[in-house]
Length: 72
Image (spheres, rainbow, N blue to C red):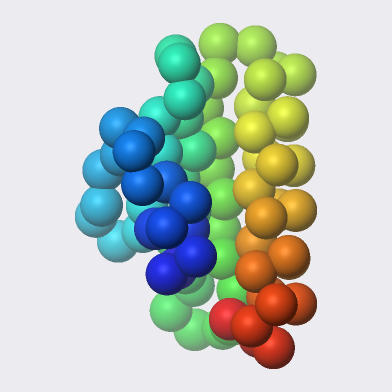
C-alpha cells in the first residue's frame, strides 16, 4: 500500500479502506484483502478498454513493487 500511496502522490485520490486514484474521467480502487495477502483492484471507466488498461497498469505496478520489496 505504501508504494501505491507514493505512486498516487499528486493525483486526486480518496483514501478509505484502500486507495482510489482518479485519472482523467477514470478511476481505480486498490484495497488489501483482510483474509489473505492479496489486493483487489476495481477500475471504473467510460470505456471497457480504458478499464482494462488501467487495471493491467496497476497489476504490473503491484507485481513490480512486490518483487522490489521481497513481498508486500
